Image (cartoon, rainbow, N blue to C red; front, side, top):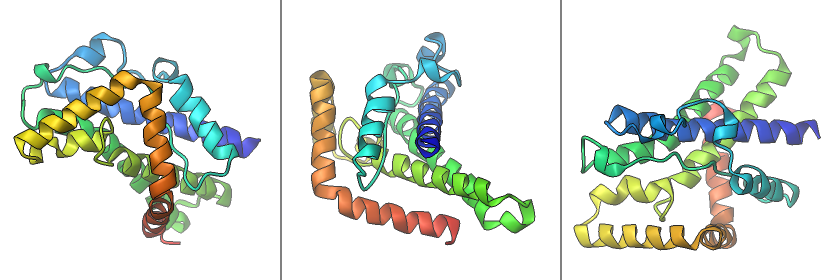
Length: 210
């Protein structure tokens, strides 16, 4: 039970920071939508999605899925308000996964220099878990499949016609709501779970050095 509680807490805080990064990036680029909606806050209640923040992670955890992930309520933003119309949305999308990688790097440094900091073994176990969760969140969200962040990150690099099709696919999946999300999760788990888990393990080992 304590491990389950730790998992939930780490995951929720990590996805909250992920969404905050999107909001702050958009605000910095000229779109105040998230700020005006009161979403630039560390209060997790404003960000929790019952399905993505609680139900799906718990289901993956208790079924011993090869990887664990989740999501929060997307921070609202208006891409037409961004100062840089070509690269702005890509920057906003990349801010979330980059924040997760930054968190992973910070806690990995605590592990690597544990002797210098004098951290107890219990903290290092928690730190290793934080690194793992944030690597998973960063990599999963960076997958270039709509409506995940990766599709918006690469959109400016694609030919106009392909980019338009990407956006249309993303809007279709968003209209499907839960069905679209479950479709992505189902396909990903059944096709890419093994390679994804191995990639996460390799990066986690490279980060913490163990």
